Length: 283
Image (tube, rainbow, N blue to C red; front, side, top):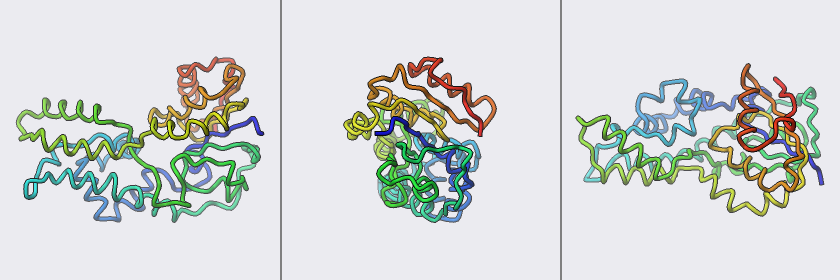
């Protein structure tokens, strides 16, 4: 069994020229869908016109604008229905429909020297690794599913009901002049909470797989994954599952100046020793 694992994030697709950023989703799909854009604008308000909101799209899905959600129809909050329709109804298949139309380039980047017989843990939905690099399908774990199952794409935030309860109280305190229906807000929170990725639950469901596949990994290569907080528990589980993690080395690829040091700091916070982190590579 191979002792190398590549952890691949969306930066890998972007590096190969694929238009897979959340800004691309906004410009090439969301804005062109009146239905989807209406749901987003009602639930999140004017912030959806802000580029920074789209940079943190998944995280921002868990930060609702209660001021836009309190109107009711026949006693039922419109926000309740909108949140249900978006997060557990429309967004995953619409996102999958969009990503499925993105075509991979034909040429691999040989300068990356990817060992295609290694194992791959991918946060991406595309089949770039399989189609362009020729990686065997069984060697790639698409943790949030792929375009092979576009209706089952996993996309969402990491806020749970407790986080949303805090948000709700903060909004109420900061907007005392507004009519605020606690019962409406709680119904909305329940629907928004269902739109979480449930990363910890997904890890628990696949715990055996982490231990079976990653217990003997000696070389970790992180490509295009920024070690964001939402998905970081997956890396923590890999570390936990590895029998010789103190001896394993890590190679981090980064895209922007300063990002390499930030990633090193994140790895140190996970308990990885500095001497086991190889000099990061900028691509």
